[in-house]
Image (cartoon, rainbow, N blue to C red; front, top):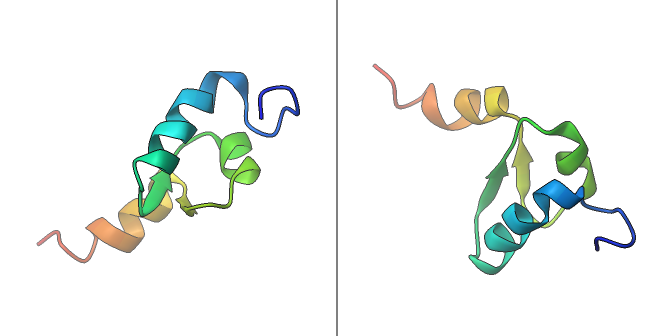
Amino acid sequence: MIDSKIIPTEDIEIYLSAKYGQADCFVSGNRELLKAIADFECLTIDDFINKYLKTTIF
């Protein structure tokens, strides 16, 4: 993955932790990383807030 530049080098540990930790979704402000992966529901921070938090905040 690092050699093919699919996932930015600085994000490889985060990606692998999420992948092998069986994460349900992946939240990142890094659009390059979000474009590079498709194993998770990938959300920007704003999308995550709108989808998961706005329905639980009073």
